[in-house]
Image 1 (spheres, rainbow, N blue to C red):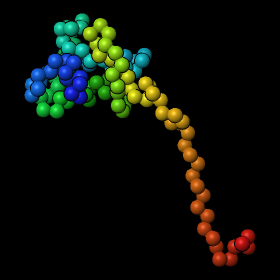
Image 2 (cartoon, one colour):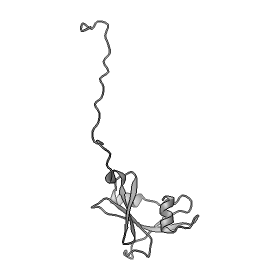
Image 3 (cartoon, rainbow, N blue to C red):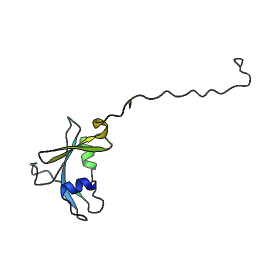
Image 4 (cartoon, rainbow, N blue to C red):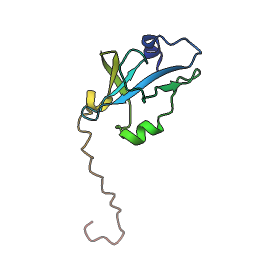
Length: 115
């Protein structure tokens, strides 16, 4: 988690913190919210982010939801959820699906009659 988002969340430097992580399968957005600021079921446990690098384990989240891999950018805060959209969805790379043709590497042969 970057410094700007830690500041928005009110994270104390050097202290671990918790946040709920959600996925919207319709939009592909990922949401983050502080416990107590959003209504979630009692059986939903927030992710714990460590105090050194502010990382959280995401294996279960990734396996369960299969979000698109890559960089996500902040788009909005709504109902105390911080929403993030995949960078390519936010600003698609032009012609990302077009693969340039390969150049033919033709070697000259000594006995080539075309020459």
